[in-house]
Image (tube, rainbow, N blue to C red; front, top):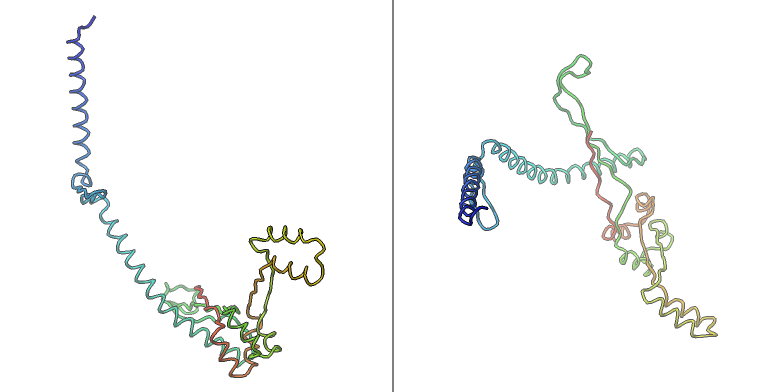
Length: 239
């Protein structure tokens, strides 16, 4: 039977082997340049310079900066393209009594020359400016124009679609119980009580042919509506 001294010697020997293995593993890891040059600041570790990934890190940073610059420039150019496309669309429709929604703006690019190309070395491409017949309406202002008869009813019905829906109020269940306890309630009293069960939701939208109808009203009405009805910005498509 091993003595206590022998047991202690074995444990000491095992610990020495374990420490040696751990030291060897640490030495191997510290040969990694990212870890060898690492500096810790609280919960952030700044790794050492690693040639294996440094060029990718630089490329990622440069691409991100280029992307942000391109997004900012595109936002500015997009405004000009939208305005140009909308203006030319309106001019075309007015001139030729048409109702097109999209204009394709041409530009040319250099391409590899080939025998099948009609214009070797050049190719015409297009940016499409798509103007949908969609508008945003300031509901309260539009309804005020209707209710005050600022816009005649005949014109209003051509310009706008008003939808009213009724929905139960949050406390409808309690109100229903109250109505049911009022046995014998009939006529106007019942109708009045029933109305308290609902909220009325009103939606206002431009009619499908708003663009055509707005040209038929007088200048004063057109000016008023230009403040509360806005056409949705055209979309750009690239081909």
